[in-house]
Image (cartoon, rainbow, N blue to C red; front, side, top):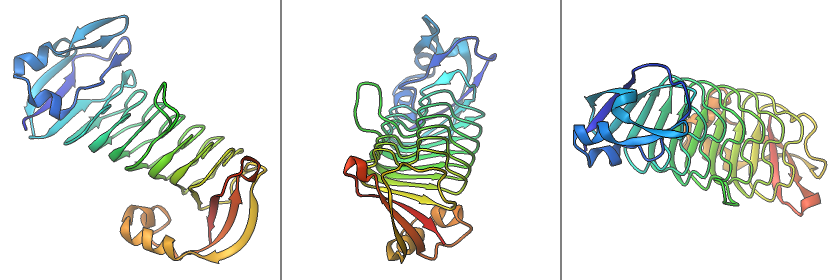
Length: 268
């Protein structure tokens, strides 16, 4: 599989939809065909070659200049790697089924929406609705791993149905809203309203949540063998919490007002 490096000719004046521009898709095209591939550009379309300088790159890899107006980077990625040198716009990594997306800057709203599988890593912060449902769908992220080094915006993991999300900074209001399954781990502070409507799944915290949903009941400190096992299997989880996870933690169950049996676990 051939690869490409795409360097922006100039900062984008309007939003661009990068859906479907993946290593797999471009590998099937000649250099000329790839340059002529059109993408939504504001109210119209533009050729990739008019927006980017295009050069050959590492096989199976797509390297892209970052821009906050470049939306849907990595959407539908199924294999290979996309590296973004700078920020990404909205819905980066949405609907991914495999592969790896690495963003050197910040990411916009809807990061990893509807993610099925694969690995998303963000060196900066991310916006609202990380791991949420895609437009027209009820379920959010279903699998895979998402790592965000910085803070994330409101409604982290809304309607999440699987996978693991690691957040190095703070999380905005409404984290784990309607969570059905999966794990959200937050090393920073979690704002008010966490866990509202949560059915199952886990919100793993380094600090007590600020004003969590009222339907949570404290069950006291416990020893969680599964936490130690998970930390061994996913070294990035242990690193998020300082290099190790003891398994000793406080536990709250809810959202009981929604008939939920999810859990908030506060690490000792």
